[in-house]
Length: 115
Image 1 (cartoon, rainbow, N blue to C red):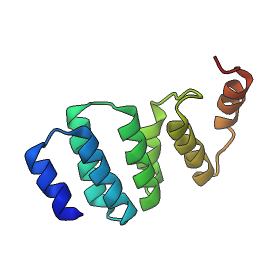
Image 2 (image 1 turned 45 degrees about the horizontal axis):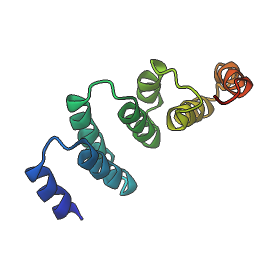
Image 3 (image 1 turned 60 degrees about the horizontal axis):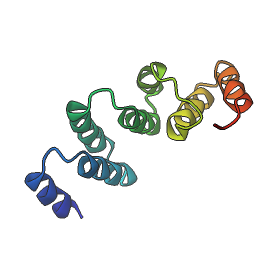
Image 4 (image 1 turned 60 degrees about the vertical axis):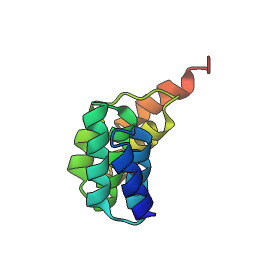
């Protein structure tokens, strides 16, 4: 699949979906540096994209770089409709053994009925 990704990227180097899928492929293979580079390419095209920042945070969590993951997640304020970001922030709090700050956020989301 690597050669297919590379050929597709050669043909369409700004295809965000393609770059993201390539990054996820690297992530699944635990090739974290390559995955992060692909996600950086996505951020060059779509700066501050929440989904991409969350994916980068998940990779840095897997690498054990909790301070870097925290820095990526701190600026995000996901709502109930952004489950990936919320899940990654909760997991970060668990990894840091500091779940208290995230509990009020979760309670507020649970108290708000779906629209």
